[in-house]
Picture (cartoon, each protein chain N blue to C red):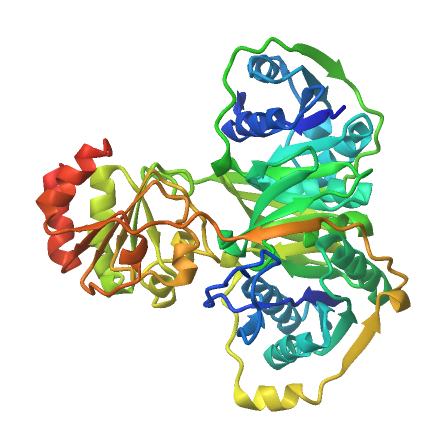
Length: 247
Length: 314
């Protein structure tokens, strides 16, 4: 069984993003970029399935610009077998999902594992949209994943706690935070990753038409949170809390 | 004229607050009506009776089918698609169900989705958070497309009662997949309030120092009836498990009162508490960034201050 994993190049989670003063978006000049943290978890989940003998090949896929090669190399260093970069600038989830569905069919994938959301756009849509377009089951927000033959049993994080579902394969999984802890990449693996195949494809070559997109009217910083005051003692803190009706 | 289809949710016969909040969002769109649809396997009259009372709701539609016993996205989505034709907007709360289900609907309709609507600016124009709330984007849905959106719970109030909508039972002729099957559900049974929904939350950071020391946090939380969280630094250090992580890659929460204890205030943590009502910070480093956003700050040793605060509030 082949597994496709999604890899998105995003602003590193430790960077404080700045909204451009003209409201045209956030400033990405010179900002550190990384693999979306939830995608690292997705990659790890796929690698563990391969290491357990339940998958034969892990293919890392990104939809973006050539710069995303860097993140695909990280996925290859973690252990993915090969990588595919589908060139598209600023693609929104529906277009990306069309790409994943087209690749899943082309590669005859048994599983597509994606992060539950990317920490830039925070849309949280691509996995579900991929499943819908591919007309296959989905198991989002995965906390635990077991593959048994032609089925997967997935425990999902839901508002009320945990829910377990069984899906027939092929299927799409989206990884939540607790699914695993991704491995660290070692230097020899980075060297090895340079020799692994990385193909570039276009939307056209996959027969994918760019989907209708949301128009971004403007971007603004959130209302600023003002720091309040420092209190000198526990007693003063207690009286402040009581004054505010919080106790 | 706009018409909104809102997918309602319920648990144990009770309509969710998220649904009642999404009604407020729907009512903020200039509309010719808001229809709430609920899907279930049994008698839906009790849930429907709660929905009809919400101001702004024009009709409540019940769809009863054995396959709807559990809210599985793959099963519910095709039914929503079948109903979407008569509506300009399809909305659902940004609950785990809403987030799971609606993108399937949008993808089949071939339209983009707006996740986490914070504010309605116009019939087709909405605000939503990106970068964990650090950049608020105004987006517009191109003309001619059905508008699909999830409604951010923390941004809307529960719709007031006072409506008197009609109830209509509907059956849909849609082929439903059997490739997704419900196995079971485990609801967290802790005496401690759930981190995500608690009105008070106490979080510990690296300053707590060890897993053993976290007892101080748990003890204080139990005394003030709070949920417990942790910073990513505390989770990475192995003090507590990552289900407690508050922040950009953990849980994004909005309690009325938040205590950040021994937390320096990394960006990734602050992203998770932006919507908290009052933030109290206790940290021995008076230069810690957490004090820049805390409403009330107390500089000092948490191991002295927290037990003292516990005693004072008891």
